[in-house]
Structures are given as C-alpha cells and as structure tokens.
Length: 592
Image (cartoon, rainbow, N blue to C red; front, side, top):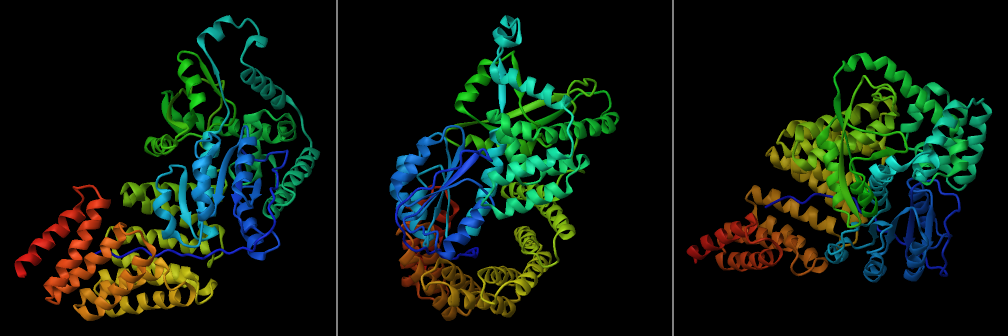
C-alpha cells in the first residue's frame, strides 16, 4: 500500500471566438517561440488574458491558433528558432501526429481539464513533456525548457583541418567564424557613453512592447545599470541574456550593435575577475564540463571537425561538477532531433589569450536560486537525497535574503525540502518543513486554495509515518474538505485524498472505515483511468488487503486477482508489485 502524492489542479476554461492566427514579431528577442493552439481561445476573456500574461513572462513571442492547420502552418514558417506548443487534449490527439516529426519543434504540453483522460495516449510521443490542468505547472515546465533551449542553442563555429590549412586569408574562412571574430574585435575596441544604455532600453521596449514584466525590467536596467554589474545583469533571467544569445546565434547586427557596450562590459568584468582569481588556480591545468544537446546536423559538423577548431560564439558557461553536466547531456540525448554532448575542457591558467573566471559571487541571485533548484531536482531524482537537500536549502537561503517572509517561493522551497526528508525517513524535519510551507500558504492564499490542500496532505502523510494517527486524519481530512469544495466529484486529487485517509484507517485496523474510503478512491479511478492503469490495480490491491484482514477471503482473492491482471498487462514481469500480489493470492488460497 502506498500513499498517493497530492497535486494542485485548476481547470482552465475559455470562451469561443473566430479562428485566427497572430503572427510572431519580425524582431525575435529569444531563441524560441511558443504556439498555443486551442479552439476555445478568446483574447477578450479575462481567464485567457491572465493565462497569456503568465506565458509571456516565460516566452515573449507567442502565436495564438484556434485550429490545427494554423499551428502546422506557423510551425512550417519557423526557420531558426525552437518552438514549444501548448495544445488542448482534444486537439492534441489529432495534431501531435502531424507535427511531432518537425525538427524545430522542441516540446509539446497538453493543457486540459482531465489529466487522466490524456495521460495514456501521450506516452507514445517523446516530445510531449507533460499533461497539465493549470497554467502554473506549464509555466514552470516552460522555464526549464527555455533554460535547456538556451543551453543547447549557443552559437558554435567549426573549422576543419583542411579549411585551416587552405585559408590564406580571412575571406576563405567559414563566414560565421570570421564575422564573429571581427565583431568581437570591433566591439571591444569601441568607446561608449551613457546614451548607449538609453538607446538599448528604447530598442528593447519596441521588442517587448506588450510584455509588462519585461518592460519593468528594462526600466530598471536603464535606471540602475553600471559596468560593475554587467555579469549580474547577464546572468539575470531577463531580456539581457535572451536577446544577446539570440543575436550572437543569428548574427543580428542591429541587436549586437545596440548591445555592444554590454558585451564589452561583461568581457571586461570577466577579465578583471580572471586577474583577481588566476593566482588561486596554481600553474596546473584543470577540467571543466559542459553538457548540452546539438542538432544532428551540427553534430555531423562537429564529427567532421576532429583535429580542427571549434569556436563558441558567446560567453561560455561551464561547471566543475561533471555529474551535473552529464545529466544535461543525457537529458538532451532523449530528444529525437538532438545528440547529447559532454564537452570536457582542459583549462590552462598559464594561457592568457582568453579570460575565464568563476562568477558565482557576481551572478544574479534569482538565477542562482533557479540553478540550485534544478540541481536539487536532479539529485532528488538520482536518489542522492543529502545533496538534494543541500541544493534546495541553498535556494531557500537566497529567497530568504531577497524575498518577503511570506513569498510563495519560500513555501515551495520548504515543501521540496520536506518531501526529501520524508523520503529519507527523517520525519520530524519533514514535518517542520511542511508546517513552514503551510504557515506561509495560510497567510497568503484563500482558505480553499489547492496548494493548502497539498500542504495538509503532506503533513498528514508525515504524521502517519510518525504513528500519530489522529493528527494524520485531521490533516488529511482538511485536505479532502478543500478538494471537495473546489474540484469536480471525479477529480484524481479526490481519489488521492480518499486513498490516503483509507491508509490511515487501515493502519489503525479500523477496516470498515478503511474499506469505505478505498471504495471511494476506486470509484473515481474506474471512471477516470484506463482499465489497465497501474493506479487502478493499486486500488484493487488495497481493497483486497482490507478484505483479507476482515477475513472475507473470497472477496480478498477476487480483488487481488483483478490487481494481478492489470499489473501483468502494464508492468514488466519481474516488477515487485507482481511478485507481491502473487504471494498474497497464494496466502489467501490457503485460507479458503
């Protein structure tokens, strides 16, 4: 028997409108764009406006489509950018097979009202990264995808041995390599005045004209920027890095010239840090790593460049942690149009032609927080829970310094830390973290908000493990009460709540009450899950165990056999669930 994790879910609804496509801007601010396709999109609807505003905080260029053909048409017009697609579940079933093979399509997100209805068919398509019922989850997933896209689309030039040997002058070199070198020399030698900051701000306002969040950051940049904060601005999750990365990749002269002073300032600050840090490296070379994805066409260029030269046409970010870089490479290798690459670079401190430096102390704090959260997520998934907690706590420490004491991000950090402590059975620490998350949410959220229910659910599960069953029931019942008020009667989160309360009564040996809640869980699962879904088998198994404890062995056998039938169809033959239920069946048969 296992508790089911609780998730926040909010159904999205939009009014209908006439079909149309809003074309992307001519001037691209980022390496990617978003296509949102849904027959019910209505820009006059406040819910739709709010959704669009949240999406634009992550991706500035958004196409809105109300028909599948419009989405396909928009995708085929894209040349250099990577594309993310959000589609409704009903449209997605027909649209995904049409677009999945398009190389510039990076990821697909299903935005629907019934998650369980679409989870089964979406598993057949590798570019579908999730099925979501609220825009908050999609924005969080998009933030990670955007980071990956920026990591993978950094401009690279290749020069083979033959090209190097035959190039008597610059005109015979590969154009991207040649132009990048010329741009660099010109920009670093140019003098700029304060008007350059004002000009860049005006230029960026035109690009982000309908993006209030980015416009506010541009205003802050014009007011506060100075050369000593160049790296801080470069690492901040805002227009500076996104526009510069896009411009250097496409050699957009207008953007590069407008950002010339910024390029020079970042370079000079790295040079200054290098001079301050170089003595600490000693005289011996050391290794740094970079994990990323390469499009298959670029990988072929890389393969043919063996023994030649490769130039990264941007400021290059690397890590001294090989394991983290390997993770990024492996993640990229799962993409059908990409090859995962791990670059291992030997840095010789004695060579002074290209400056390098650790920028940990000069980076934007919010960027650090996001980075630590990603590392915590990676370590959590790998089962390295001590490191996961350390990274999550680093994120929490940054947020405690930079955010208000009741900021929702603090609650998320406490929740993540509590979940890891729960996994390693340090229940008192898990309880403390989850209670801190709950305290923040109680102060900042409505009394029936789903995030509150999630906190109550997590606290209840911790109390169960601590064998404080009355407290466990109290918390789990509060979670259930919120879900009953805010969710449809067949919502999966309700099934989760019924199951978890049933687990507590089961442990307390109050089997009739446990059976009642397990049956409510099963009723929802039968209505919302495919007939061979593993969660359905878990429900049958739990009911079978209750009947066994109630000494009703014939019913116990019936439910165990239903669980076995599903698990045998859905799981590998060596899966422990199959072994467990087979053993249970043998025990019950001996009782009959």
